[in-house]
Length: 252
Image 1: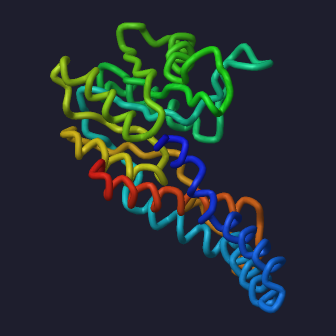
Image 2: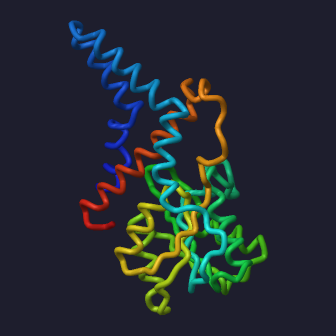
Image 3: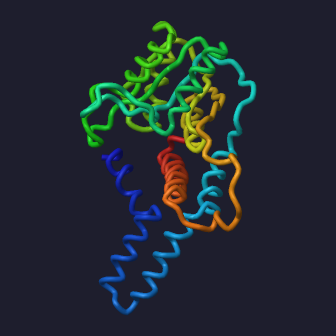
């Protein structure tokens, strides 16, 4: 139930959800029609601009700058969310927008920063049937890329970031592994580090998939709304909300 609610209820407080609620209220509250509509438009415009969305994302990404020379560890842990697992009409896994995570792990391994890679990620049933867990699909890809099976561990039951950490501990603790290189998207790193540290890991953050810091256009264009801006704002708000909820539950 927590998983379902965590995926659905936040939609109501993201910019698009709030906008739709306000527009709906304007229908049932004719006297306040103008107030609701103008507020909805202001929220949608503000969170769709580059200047707001980039600032929100940077507030998370800047907490863990990119590593130049990472400290070696006992294992590389890669958090899921970067593959479309085989399913439906597609018999092979394909990379999604966060595929830098797997590439980062591969680079760290080939640089001899750790002897093993732990791949995490299960399947969320209500997102649609798939033929493989994300961890299994990622393992198959790394084997295809030439990594030895002995270097790959797999955690394929987790459905959220907390379970990523919890089930990873169950795999790594018997191997006396507590120091890890944690690989995930930079925007997701603050919440991830907090969770793994709470469970007793010594975490070396190895962020990737940066969404900010690549330079920006003219200031005027940063004030124009765009679908990408709205998406980035929503991602950032999701992370801040998730971090807050996890801290309340004592997970981070």
